[in-house]
Image (tube, rainbow over all chains, first blue to last red):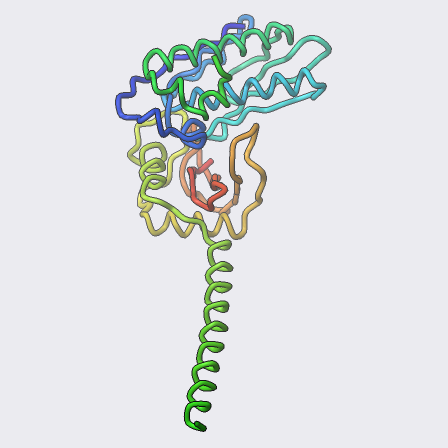
Length: 144
Length: 133
């Protein structure tokens, strides 16, 4: 599973005052790069709130690890979705906007999501140093 | 002496009356505020940037040509009043309302006709986003 992002340039946001709602809907926007096996579920819409996606994927993985059979991620500005279905130690991934079903080990999915969160946090702090001290960033992406 | 007593009684009655009215007004406002959501300028700009007919944002539903701020407010209020409500997902704050207008209100992300509206409302009763699907 290849989980990555393309962050839009942002010179307007005051990262010292960014709220969770901002992170969920309005800031740190960009594209999703998402391959599961040979399936490409990337979304290059440009408006995807990446911190929200990272936090949501992390919660989905936690729920799957906790025994949930199926979890669905809904994008914030459309009815598009990504569905994760647990089959034993595997996870089947499908979307409303891409063809096919990808398969990945749950442990690999967990590692990919953790890495995604860490890279995004590091990238944001590098570009916007005030993000390091923002409580909402820490809460959603985890402290460094 | 009697005049003073009468004045005091009159003032006390006036205060009681005022207090009663204030409670009624507060209760009335409270009732109204729970029935109506707030569409801030920021939220309107957010919706227009992504979902207005002339928006170039991809992968997002669009409202039909001719939409106005007033008609958007009307649709949002109808969706919140009559739509299906559910908790926002995966830790996102707020509530999602979805309502099928049984007529085309815009286009889906695939360009097909959209009849439904999704409204996301914060815990402060403010609209976060709204789009056809």
